[in-house]
Amino acid sequence: MTSSSSTGGYKTVKSWKDWLPKDVSILMVLLGTVFIFEVLGWFIAEQSFIFNTQRLTIIILQMSIIGIIAIGVTQIIIMAGIDLSSGSALAFTGIVAASFAQTSEYTRAVYPALTDMPVLLPIIAGILVGFVLGGINGGLIGYAGIPPFIATLGMLVAARGLARWYTSGSQVSFFIDDYAILGSGIVPVIIFLTTAMAFHLLLRYTRYGRYTYAIGSNEQAARVAGINIRAHKLLVYTLAGGLYGLAAVVETSRTLTAQSGAGMLYELDAIAAVVIGGTSLMGGKGRITGTIIGVCILGVITSGFTFLGIGSFYTNIVKGIIIVAAVAADQYSNNKNANR
Amino acid sequence: MNNQDDIILRTENLTKRYGGVHALEEANFTLKKGEHVAIVGDNGAGKSTFVRQITGVEQPSSGDIFFEGQRVEFNSPLEAREAGIESVFQDLALCNDLDVPSNLFLGREELLFKFGPFSILDEKKMMQKAKEVLERTAIKIPNLSNHVGDMSGGQRQCVAISRSASFASKLIIMDEPTAALGVQETTQVENIIRGLKEQGVPLILISHNLRQVFNLVDKIWVFRRGRIVGEVIAAETDGNEIVSMITGMQDGVHEKASYI
Image 1 (cartoon, each protein chain N blue to C red):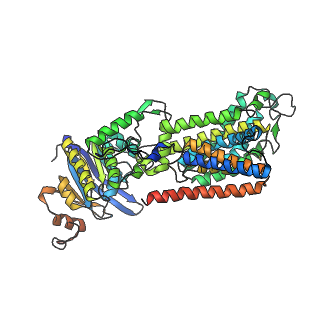
Image 2: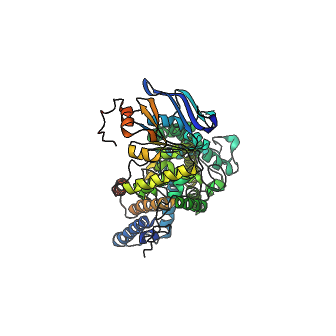
């Protein structure tokens, strides 16, 4: 299986491990998780866990929204940053988007003059507000030099406040039919996978991706190489914000209502999915494909616990353990590499 | 007097203060085209501070830098690079999670399609050029698509130096290029430096290794406590004289200096 050149020229040296796709180990974890729930399902509930169209649909729908957020978070973590504000950003962008998506049949719309608008308006509004929130994060981090943890923690609190302020705490619903479509059927999955594909290509084949990895790997080296670190951070956080806005559109459409309490703790689910998917919190390493699998693992666990009738507090305990375990595994492998 | 046309880099009263600390005091330095010089001095003598000013990493508190006869002000390393000043830094400025071509071309990628930050990379062309560059320097790196973090210190340093050497630069600055390397790797790096001399590329070498300095350069500049205390032709001096200039002590005191 091993081919190498004895002269030390430029022929490729590959071990059998290089032939496997990079995300195989995470995929095995996903299959293992599914398998465990499948076996438990037959023993405890006497039915199949995974071969159930309804359950599968729910898993996939839930995953799509966390997934869209997790794509934004993946590129941030690759750049050795962090974003705690995605859940709050989803609440605020969702409520803004929803306020432009109301039908004139409802007499107490947020903007009575702006009802029955084309569906593109709320979508663009949500994404634009997301850009602004992400841009503020990126500006604070890139230009003001505030650590990402602190800057986005501030945004976590502030965006939640904005969401309450926007409609004085009341929820927004009664949407036009076109808007409701965005969160129904297979549409969220299509939006998720399209976004994932776009960002996979961006990270893999463009200067944007190259600089994201370079900054995460060695910020000093990237600066010396002439990369505009500040502008790049601003751009990465801004694009992530736009994704939170997109996720908010899908979420509000799916639940048919927008409220200031939406997206609570989504930021942790997204970070968990990214870390489980093999992206290193140290920066420089990670892939969108891994995140997709990470999102699936989280979705399967959440759904599996519900399926087995285990309370949601247990789910949160297990999620917490998984996040810590994934980070520990990452640090262990980093140490092993460093000691080689 | 030097003919002005022969001079590629000159500094006039270059001074850098960090708060009350005078890291560099009125440095007057000249480098001729094609010349290889070394900067030596004890720790804290101002060598690295001097280099940081002329490579745009920091901006001098006062004084002027002239490059190719023009007064220049570099506000960033990028501006210095664009002017043709390449540097290999002490701390190995490589991205461990990127492969060899990505590191060689970082910040000046070959592009298939230009669209601001979303420009599409021409990976094939970069790989091809990387192979050519490394073949010229006779460095053995088995697989260029490995991450440089997985490579040996010597291979990494060779990548870093090749990066500087391969981009038609007008001046290369190396800060302790062999400090962390083994004997064989050091020889490889020294061969690359000799190759630069043949190509007529001027070089400023910062090194603690006086044997290496005497082997490689034409002229030695000695720094002490932030000041330039001497410029001597390498062929007209010896280790003892340099050591006494570095330490500021009389000849003979350091006859058995362990540095040599």
